[in-house]
Each structure stands twice: as structure tokens, then as C-alpha cells.
Length: 384
Image 1 (cartoon, one colour):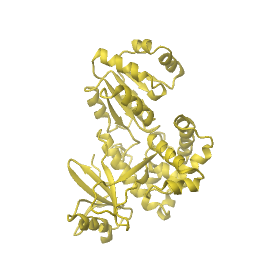
Image 2 (cartoon, rainbow, N blue to C red):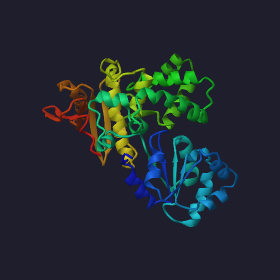
Image 3 (cartoon, one colour):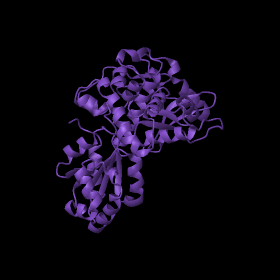
Image 4 (cartoon, helix red, strand yellow):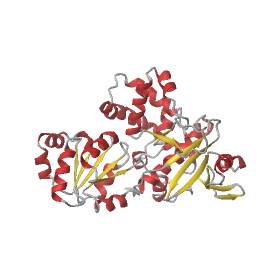
């Protein structure tokens, strides 16, 4: 099993809380991590009809049979169990009693806020990070390879080609997950909506345009975006909250949690297509932003990530608030240096009066110190 960065944080919080919750997209490796790392815990999945029936028919007996050191996978399948867990862990008063896992963030968090608030740490496990693959000596040679393959564990564990994984992933996701969250009569229209989102990576979210092109209302488009967010398909990067002037945009930008999935939705069937694809720059930008998300989640932190843009188009791609400091990054897919790479950082300096910490992350191999700022290779910038 490839070592996951989140493992140490799960161990840490099991010593602090009676319950630890691990959420994340389907197939991100949650079950594999928990079963292999915590072999002294009893593993139960509420996907198993017998286990689910026992929990539903007699929750008290269920907890009596499994009083502690239990992993409950797909916990969102029976959310009423959370209230029984609250009573049980309060009565026992020990840490590390249960690990809950699930792929429906909305359903999990709704019940956690009602029943387990203050009793559980909530951690997020996304697909592999570049650092995790590098540590396992699975090194993509170039950005386009990393973008095309994506990071879902099964691709690398079973040596699957993207075309052998992603279409089935989308089909299963829609049939098993989406139908539990929202009533969709025409799944083909929903899949079209997801594909339209892939064509808008790195753009400001325009629900009206998405709805019109897909043939749905704007409220429906908003509902579907919320479903994609809560099931870890898309990520909305918010605009920076500090107003340096009144012309800043206040609409989030759209990205995918896994860039390989986005490639599949765009109909990219070979790595070589990416080089000349109209979305190459956006896909590379998505790669870096999703890696930053993984780095923060793997440290059990809630990412403070933003972008900055005014209504004339001046922007910086990524702003990170960390340890009381603000880091500003431009993200460029090209593999050669050009002074224009720092244009967004110069606009930031003009708006704030200070050249920012950070620099440019680019598609090249070498880190460079230039008179305009620091240029970091896509391979080297992340040291989580």
C-alpha cells in the first residue's frame, strides 16, 4: 500500500477524540487506508445489507456488539446512527472508539453538526498527491502525464489506463451517489452538465450560462453544483476577501478535485492531446491548485485558498493564507521562463504597495531565482 500523508493525523486525533471521521471522494483510498492501518479495529461497512439492517433495526444492540475500536464505513447510509453514537461515546468517555468514513460530505456533515459536534475530528482524504506518488517512486515525467492520468489510487494500484477507469467512475458516481442527494430524472443531462463544467475549469462560475447550455434552470444548476461540491468532484476557489479596491470580482472559480477525471470528461483519450488542447493552461492550473488542497487536507487543515481578480482582468491565480502570512502564486504551464509570468504579481504589488511572498509555479524542471521573483518547478514547489 502506498503510504498516505493523512495517516499520522488520524493517529493523532484518535488520541484526542472519541470519534474520527474520514471523508473524501469515492475511490480515494479511505477504506484501504483504514483497513490496512488500523487492523486492530473491527471493520464494518454499511454497504453490507446485513450490517446495515442490524444497525437500522436495533442500534442499541449494534453498539453493544461493537462497543469500541470499530471502523464504520459508508456511515452516511444510516445517519440516525450518529445520535446513538453520541449517547454511547458520552457514556463511555474514552478516545479512539470509532472511525467513521464516507463519501457524501453533505450527508455526513449534516448529521455530525447535529449529533457529534465536539466529539469528532473531521479529516479529508483526496486521491494521491504528487508527493505521495513520488515517495512511492511513481513519478510522472512531465505535467501532461500527471494531468492525463490523474491520481485515483486504483489507476496506479491496478495499472489501469484512464479510459479503463474514469468512464465507469462517472457512471457509478451518478447511479450510486447523485441519486441519493438529488432527484434527477435525466442522468444524461446531469453528465452533460459535468462535462460542461470540465470545459470551464479556471473560469468564473456562471450558473446562468451553464443552465442555459444544459437546458436547465439556474436554481437547478446551483443545486447540481452543490452536489458536485459535496461529493468532491468540483472545487470552488473563492475570491480573496481583502478589498484593495471596489472593482474586485466576487464570483468563485471552478476547478475539479482530480484533473484526470476532468481530462476524461473533456474527451481527451491520449496524453499527447493535452499539449495542443485549449484547456491545457487551465488543466495545469487545476493540477497545482488541487495539489495545494491535498497538502492542506493531509495536514488536517481547512485550506485558506483564494484567487484575486479585478473587473478589468488583472489577476493572480492562487493566494494562500498560512501561519499569519499571505503567499501569492502565479501558475504557468509553459516550461520556459518569461518575465510576463510575473505580471500578476506586479499587479498585486501595485494594488497593495508590497511585492508578495510566493512566486511563479511553472511546467519546467528547474527552480530559478530571477530579478522578477522566484520561479519554482511543478515538481519541487510542494514539500508537504
